[in-house]
Image (tube, rainbow, N blue to C red):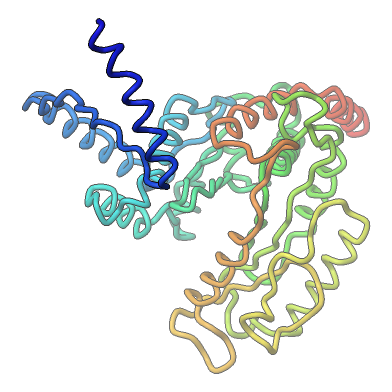
Amino acid sequence: MSDKRSRDPNKRRDRRKNESTGRPFLQAPIILDRRERPSDNTVQEVSTKQEELSTTISSSSSAIPFMRKPNKFNSETILKIIQVILLLALSENKVSENRLFYLILHKIQNTQTFSTQPNDEFLFQGHKTDGIDMYITPERAILLDTEPLSCWTVLDQVLRTGTVNGLPPDQWLEMETIYNIIFMFSICNVVLIVNDGPDIDMDLLQLVQRAEMLKFCIPDFPLLAREQQDMHYYPDIVFVCNKCTSSEFTFKNYRDLQIILQSFFDKSQLKTRGLVNLGDVLPSFQYQGGNLFFLSDIQDGDVNIESFPVLMSALRDQVLATPRKSGRKGQVSEKDWYRNAVKTFENIRKSEYINEYLQVVRKLRD
């Protein structure tokens, strides 16, 4: 002990000497304990977890059920997929070092997400999408695909296998369509309303107007504190006319439909302008109107019309450029978004305001 005390003043003296000369004081190196190499069993466990992760992500490369009737959410699978996608996103900076994630990411980007359905199959088997399907892109954008709105096949399926809750069939179909629209308006950044050809169904536009009215005071994130909620949130709306033939894909049809949409939503709180512009792709279709986009049925292009892949790519880029929806105190995670979406669905179904509207409609039609 005495030797140690005698050495301490010398150390302090040396330190002061080094400081006065401007040279750094050098401490003795600290030797850390050597870590043991992982055993073969540990390496095998890590490899097994990577394989399980690969299987889970690969299974998420196509759309999964989001909600199925009667109003059942696929919570366990969705939360698992969200967790895996987040792990993938965290690993994107290391794709050059991790071939597993690189191959998974490549597979997701080149896999068809939502299945298509020919017209003859639709007429024979009915609609394929039942309820709502979900897909998460590599950019972590969440895509939701609803069943067809105001479609007779939806009503036919319910009459065969379910119940219309004592409502007249046509009224049940109308209310289910409005419920779906309100739900999309409440949880989405952008809502795409798609139909075949340049003739948008006027009845559907009226249902969109009613859904906007009935969305009154449905908060965007009901699980957040009330002061953080936006009680009057509305998304961007984009009208897409798909499968337009060469004779339908004209500036006259485009302009006429723009005028109709402007008259419908002139006083609307829905964001129907400023997001997409067909004129950015086809200068001859430059028009200061709303969010309206035409997609052709041409695969290889034409003299005056771009091909479907080119137009679809342009529409995708413009839509995905939309800023992410955030809460009052910053960005909301995918898990929080999903939990709030489930709560929003419950609030819509239990809304006294919507139920009063339903009772008034029933009395008027009786």
